[in-house]
Image (cartoon, rainbow, N blue to C red; front, side, top):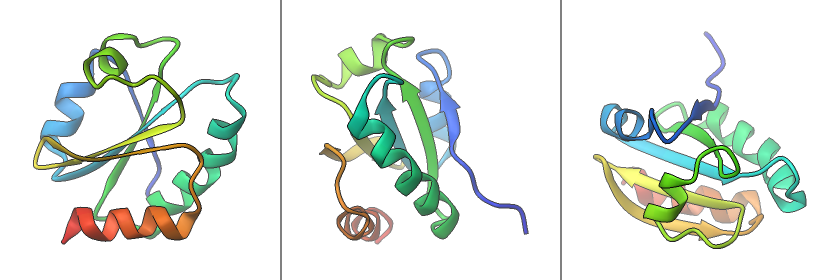
Length: 108
């Protein structure tokens, strides 16, 4: 079985990404952001452990429209979508256990 990995999402591909995935989480990050770099391996682990959720990564330095649309003022921010609609949002490098709780809520 292939490992489930995160997908790079851009301003251009964003709408299609959330429309075609029943459960989607987008990690809004930047290369220079320390907490983003701490969260990244946790997001990668969650992507493997939760094949029923599709994970995307959106670089906020290269893509400005999506962060502006969702009022993202600090990173890392995770956006949780269910059936194409924003259902949850978390800010900061949260512990894996806390993020797993949010994922359970998303897929229930």
